[in-house]
Image (cartoon, rainbow, N blue to C red; front, side):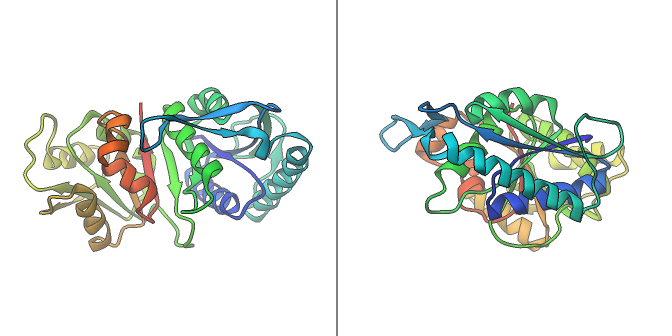
Length: 285
């Protein structure tokens, strides 16, 4: 990983995302790109693939983060970015360079448009999970990163200061999405002190079983622990395995079923996004 991208506003959860990004940047020798995204005035921004309980598309007015107030917010976001970069001994530069550095950007457009452009030319995107109440904008940014970037997205809980990446769990369901998430997380897995593969009950799906994934990881110098949890609810099984192994990061694929179906009937991805208060690295392609 050489480029870590962080959407930035002058908010506490953004400060947390930035600090985590710079900590990972030092660990992986990566640059950190901070970007303040400002909406076009009077535009309507749709939640990416979002639906309400009746199946209607959800929208949110961009007026809440546009115009003159947002221009001031952009300066505050830039100040926050520079402060956190300095804390982690990163030089803020105007142009990219091979040496790990911090780069500041400001873009105008909806989060889905900006992240569909900037996401694919990044190696990792770091965002914070929205608050349970009043987190519409944070939710919009989180879902835009996940649905439109085609890159791994690290989603952080609102609370907690525990370093991540030392004890990593992989949620394994034999799917192509999970395999791609493992591939994307390989730089972190190689540096982890402990890696666990969590499966749920009998592995009867098409695709590699957990022991075959363990064999693959051995080629990369990784010796994972196999954890099989007998629990009919897969989300609860993953959380149990995560806690039992005292992990600090979960790696998983996102939306192996259609997102519409998951929003209506529930699913592991939705549970991890909105109910599990743990750091999760997800990839949706």
